[in-house]
Length: 405
Image (cartoon, rainbow, N blue to C red):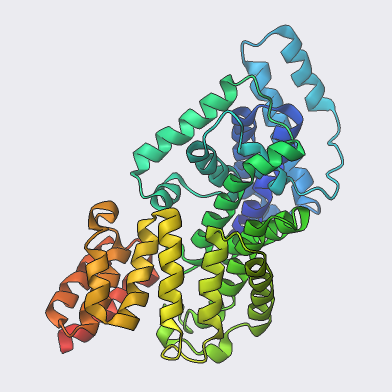
């Protein structure tokens, strides 16, 4: 690993903590975000040559505070504001302590002045470090639409009379659903990144797990937080078998299950089993239950596909998410045959458009049904729309196999 790539990974993990510290102290989210970005640029241009400071978090925080002070000095703010800026510049950094500013920032970003559809993208940018394009893909909307949504969210927060501060216990509970959604999307992007040359972003998924552990420990009675943690552990357990020596994608049916992390599976199964015994199912608990069925199956063929199809049906009714229907179609095909799965796909084409995973699933089911020509066409569409190199390589391999006949 090169010094530059090492620095990039470290900065990605530290950025939310610095932003959280500044926002918690000074309350101006937009200005703090700009200051952090400038500090990150300074670090990325100096650390690879000069080495990482002994206390990189303190270094970034100090530089970002200075940039924030410069911002207020150069603005047309009132004299009192300028005086505050001057005091911040010379004030020594406060002890960082053991508080998890990334987790605090998540609750802060889920601001009462914002709807969930605005708060979640804003938080994904601030805490997850996701690009606007990646966030747009997660929400199945155009990138320009998401950019406008994030800009409006920042403007709304700035205009709001409600300060950015640590929420009360009551407010924290009200914001929990948005926080869990952010963590879920963070993990998904880390486990199966939408773009780039790598199949996964392990640093991002690991951070999502770490933060979810923090939420679970702070709110142990919140079953959906427990369900989400179980889902992450059960999914992450399959990571070692999901890619080959050259980083190539290995689909579930071809994975060497002896490489799955049995300790994570055991931990995830205990968590979701305890949740299910308490009743009151939520969407993350259902997804964790599905993951547990997969992880406990000795082989792909021996998987209880009927149970998975039934669980997806419950999840589909709960969320009305077309991606859930996409996954249910695969399970139904394994139980009732590929044509039954294809019939389900006909109802979601207008909602997913040219999404590569819709084409990939349709191609897979057509291949199962023996329609190799139609499967070939669908795999080509999937490959053309895939933005991750590893997924595209896998789809092109399928195309090559079908071409050879």
